[in-house]
Figure 1 (cartoon, one colour):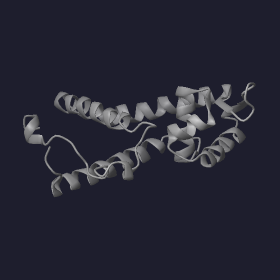
Figure 2 (cartoon, helix red, strand yellow):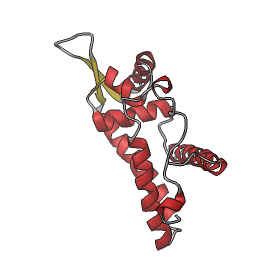
Figure 3 (cartoon, helix red, strand yellow):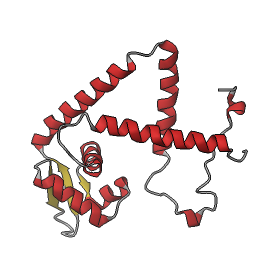
Figure 4 (cartoon, one colour):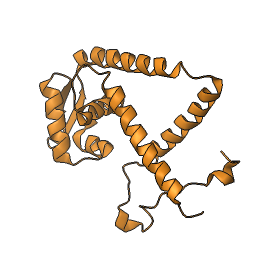
Length: 171
């Protein structure tokens, strides 16, 4: 594998900024006024709940005290419900409150409709490129699971590594 170049560094910066901007635009479609951390935690609770606070903190890559604060805010808004594990009272599980399900579905519909509208401008070639891009983004997002190694564990952790375009047919 070759070393990253200045072009690679610029591409990484562009990707990071584009993903952040798109994320912000998608959050703007939301009416609930949640912070990004609360919206992300709620999405995880919806897909993985009921989930323990510890597992939620790991999934969101935040400290237990941070996730406790986030969940308390969601709970005070009536969006989630917390329960204590009967076999171990130190363990709290959180799940989406019934009234939040409809709000979440409405938000998801609105966000997806906005995104679909933006994508309708593109032709077939752009759609094929988008499919490849989504697959790459899913791979990148899935590659950073709860078992993340610290940079001290891997001296190459900070260096981006991927196959060079020349090796993939000039794409």
